[in-house]
Image (cartoon, rainbow, N blue to C red; front, side):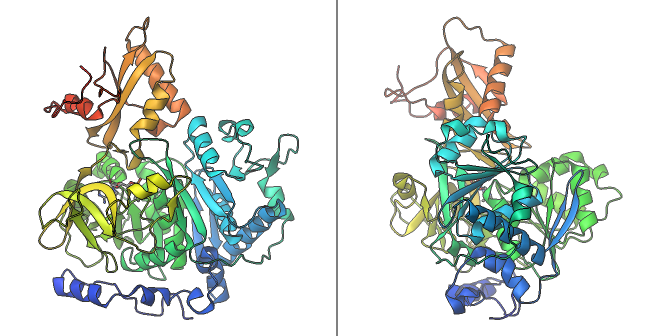
Length: 574
Ligand code: WT7
């Protein structure tokens, strides 16, 4: 077992030269990546071991693992500190009878305790379920209920959004910044940690044992619990090396929240498997704050999202004046199409070519990327990584030639591919309806250099500021409002956010369509689901277009909105 960085990793493509790429693809073997893990020799698997304990064992315990700051806190933790904190939390969980396979959720802002508890959960073989702090009552309840979570780590401020009386499986609530109150069933995180031992016997697992769950939206039904297993670490580590280009001295900053997959795969696992310093900045987005975070921490690798880059662009040149961004050596983006203007902005003001990467919650890690050294075509997502085969398929599963638009599909399996959708086999199988392939739901084409170009979603999933929103979840909430008879929700193109949520609503008898009512309805969704799920635009209609079976035709709503032809209306109601 060598040093994390001692071996040359396969799959690294040094230049834009097509023959370099072809050679890397031909020589690639996942097994060469697997050799870098301690379990390759021992057969004993645990993500938290590879990401934390192993560094301590191999003499890197004093290296900085986490640089955390927000408006009030400014803290730094070594790998040895992470080991100690996560051991304690693992012991706390065991004390309450929690163990392998149990789902333990975390619902709190990005603070060091979030990271300690997540690692502690993994140490005892439990499955972590991080929830974005902006989720409101219904969103929190749906996820805790579906997963059957037995414990939750949260804060006193967020506790009122947890309907514990409706969640019989939820036995323990740990309050970060709160105290133990047996009567209420709350346990103080700090007290529990102080009383727990810092020594822990790790739960050794197999590659197919559970790791983490992330809920994500489709176009129908409630959010799906995308379930990932330990094996994903192979790809988290690999892409950290060949796409993020992490090297031992890097200071890396991923701006995503662990409530979303980017914030765990690339905000926790990838950097720590690679042993680099991970920056976490708490609090809300502000251009000044973000640039200062790069300057102050000397961030060398920065992974963010188009919506953030567009907001930084919107803040203009003056927001960069006097700030030293020269520590940056590699900048990447994910979540939505990266506009060529943004790439040009990066060239000019960060002196960095922003590298777009494509993947999804379900894929667990990056698949199609612009890797370092590659000739970037602004607007393209890049090429499949060595080890990954991507193609454009028609609906019957035929591989289409270059420049034909179709279903973006990936050859199955790959290490970080989701293992299942929690409690929903049918939803899982929909992705694999064409034998041998995973159907992403995105449409794209490939050019004759093998670069992939994103075209849109095939379903009605909305992507607003890089956050994926299912229209059905929003519609279901809307019709709970007493004034709303029917609702149809679409994504409306927006320059900064990519898309915004627009709701078409027909009112019940006796309600008058006013601006005040629009605000009230938007606030209702915000309070029930989350701010990012609330419609920014509402339009009242006497009637909504429906199929004869009563399904609202979002396609027609979208055509109205964009002033496009409505297409085939043969299934419309009247
Ligand atoms: C959907 C997945 C895991 C990354 C965070 C989002 C869109 C993602 C790109 C890109 C164009 C992109 C796709 C995809 N998307 N990356 N580089 N260019 N679109 O994860 O919430 O699971 O959403 O985001 O539509 O299917 P997610």
